[in-house]
Amino acid sequence: MKQQGNLPEIRLVAFDLDGTFLDDEKHIPAQNLQALEAAAAHGIIPVPATGRLYAGLPQEFRSLPYLRYFILINGASIYDAKENRVLFSADLSNTLALDLFRYAETLDCLYDCYMQDEGLMTQSMYDCLQDYVSDAHYVQYMKRIRRPVPNLPQYVQKNGEAVQKIQYFFQDKDNAIRLSQIDLLPRLFPAVKATSSMASNIEINAADADKGHALNTLCHLLGIPVECSVAFGDNSNDLAMIQTAGTGIAMCNGDAVVRSAADRITACDNNAAGVGKTILELLMQGTDS
Image (cartoon, helix red, strand yellow):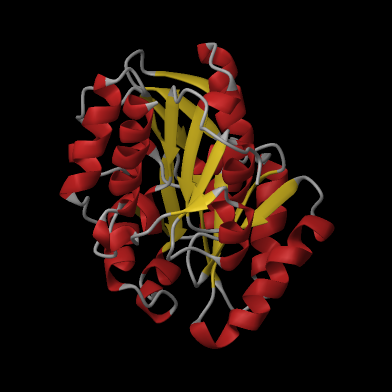
């Protein structure tokens, strides 16, 4: 536990989306939205912190007037929507991305990438996503946010730009291999960080790109002590953020490692507005103190 006694003043709340703020069908529970509105009314800055691109956020979410700052792509980007400006970025070099694609070819997995704020995937892999990702709602989301290209490595090499994130996707039967690769990849490629946001994937970012570093950077830019931040998450790509925040809160449906690192755990899961209920509790505590 990072702190004892009463919570410090809360000035910023960061929250993961999938498995945390969104329910399993990728909808936003009404109480979560009510809690964000209440937090904003108290002068607290709500900040989505997700592995997604900005374009991959639900449209109703992007239109909320009190959401300005976004931690995106697992912390590879901090975006100011009001000024349409990237405040921080940490990408994979083009050469490193190509090396990671070549390595993926040695594994029985699919792979994609985010580059220039666009999801890209080889057409043949795009066509068989459902064989590797069992969550039908996530498959639908993935296909909506990715553009298939004839050959992803060739496309990235010809483009020549840096890559924001790479994902590997494994079939359920290969979960042991997937978990071993999360540990192995940073040893093979010291310039990367490997995490996971769902049961079938590995998310590969630059070593200096994680939600914790991004949260700390955003707090610094806004003049907010990181001790005055609260963060919600459920999976390993949220771990650094949970550890960095003044109060790290794990979802009760979250990974055991994340729950063990958190200051507290939600009473309800992502389907029952665990984030919203906890924010409202924190606001009530602040009112009573």
